[in-house]
Length: 149
Length: 319
Ligand SMILES: [Zn+2]
Image 1 (spheres, rainbow over the protein chains, first blue to last red):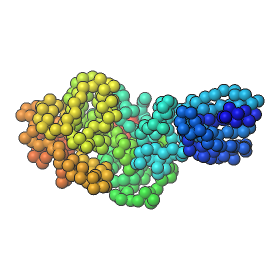
Image 2: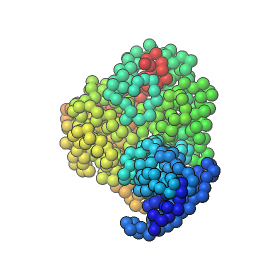
Image 3: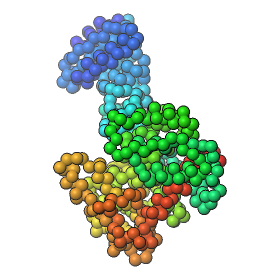
Image 4: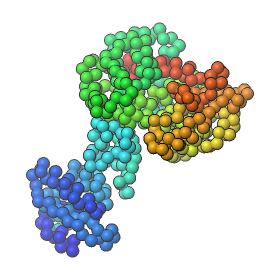
């Protein structure tokens, strides 16, 4: 079923196996960057998954995002185990796990430092160093607290 | 790494960095008169977003004794609301405009000093950030230990009372770098040494022993060179019925008394101060004994901070 949906895209990206219920937030991320870059449309749906019960799928029509850039980083933070495919002429160009597409240092307000006393909750932009990719483990660059995603 | 640079965390220091700093601190302490002009026409900003009388006073003293000035200073009273607090970034911008050559920042939030170092190009000295780091305390402790024993290796340390929330235990990140150091930990189980420190000690193949039984005090003391007590950080306990109940059991559960001390032994008892007035982890009967080292330790805060300023603000001894 999913394969058929992927084929519907001529040029763009598919974010498959998104953690259930993160699809909406991935959609928000794509919309935010789409608005900046002026591309669209974006479609999102929720499907049954063999391994995890349910999964979300999002698609980006007409544009390829590069690894380690803004939207890619935020999607990887939201759903590190998602599968990212780049599609061109209806064919899958390449496929990666979202955690492979994450920059070594990411600044994002999508996730919070779990240390309630951290300066990021008052002033500093939440910034995290990737300590380990699978399973994803991050370290706050300010208070040095490590945590799993 | 080389001097001058910011002082953010004790974990950033190599033994060579510390040796360099302690050598200079020793020289300054021996002949303070020789350094009266080294900071002439240089200005330090003292930005205390939470009060700390000892840290504030010793930095102010250190700077003025080097002939330097203070460009900007404030000490926020306890209980200042988060809403009213000026932002770190805008305060640093102002400190720069006031002609500061360096910053000392104390802030109740963890990571505030690292953030400050990111938003300013001035050298930043961390005067304590929340429950995170207090490197200038760690460095003056290292100075005091070295001054007493002539080395930082092959020593035995006993850390006692609050090992969970006290920042003085951060010194382990440095002491564990030297060969032959051994560590004892004695506390109430609710405030035991955090796992991160235990893994660090294991990773560096250090020998350590943990106990929650005050009956182990005499044995640990008899073996140790340094007994280091930390005040119970009552403000860190949850404000719940359960939290208050735990605090009741923790406070006063580990107390070093004169009767526990070995008869004759090379031992110093240290404490970062202030002591808990109502539940001190070192009993009053230790105050007058030669092992009582905490006031001397606090006094070392001035020459050690003088050395930090000389190195950090790029004075004559910066490299
Ligand atoms: Zn943090």
